[in-house]
Amino acid sequence: MKSFVQGLFNRLGLKVIKYTPSPYENLEKQPRYQKKKVQLLGRDFKIADSFSFFHSYREIFIDQIYKFNSSSEAPVIVDCGANCGTSILYFKDIYPKANIIGVEADPNIFSILESNIRSANYEDVTLLNKAVSKEAGTIDFFSEGADGGRIHPLEDSQAKFEVECIKLDQLLEEPVDFLKIDIEGAETEVICDANKLDNVSQLFIEYHSFKDTEQTLGQILDKLTAYGFRYYIHTQFCSQNPLVEKSLQLGMDLQLNIYAHKIA
Image 1 (cartoon, rainbow, N blue to C red):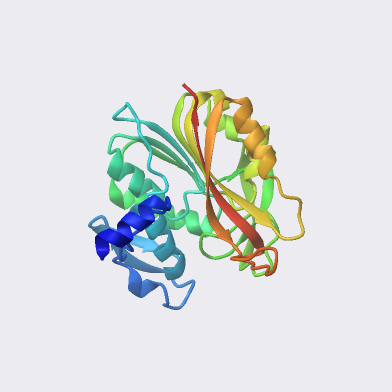
Image 2 (image 1 turned 135 degrees about the vertical axis):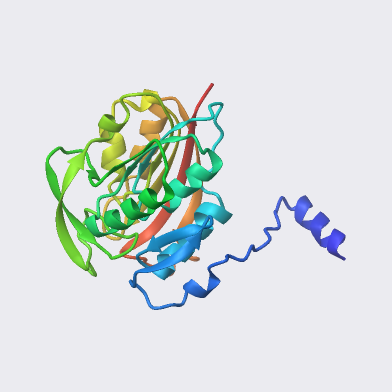
């Protein structure tokens, strides 16, 4: 029976995906926005919110959404939106000699990130408490308390900070093997403002579409095409029946993962 079902799925072009339990299943339903320590890769790891860590661990370590190939043992990685450092630990796990720049805007989250990276004793990791933006100077940042902080006004913001900005081109002065951008809605203006994407080999962008605002996915894809990237898209969040029912998540009606690599 099992082989029959598998054969049917194969003929239909469908793939059976086995659910892999997370070692942090108990965190998903714990009270939110409470700092605590967990064990990650055999060491203490501080988190700001159990729910968001549960989901980020699943995406990063189980689904491996940031997995990429590199011919170098020491790839250069730019991590825009490093949060508490889960992604940096993943990168260092698959490429121990990687050179990483981690950028995180939220001052409270940055202090946790800094502590986690310091305790891991990683070499070649540079951390910047800045907001990646198309503008220089400073900008208001709205903290959500976990991984949802952003420069766009947030109704349920726990705090507002004035943070220093850095332009993406400043992070792309040298060749970059992998660029990760997860900056909660600022991705389009940041990517479209960049002039040094020629230095990037592979990238990941988390695209966010906010209700009642113009969608800008096309602008990102046009920019990637102009710089010789081939892209792939996975849906991260969308209503099951978007023409009938509008589901929202932190004011967003659509969230996509965009993967891209330079065409050889």
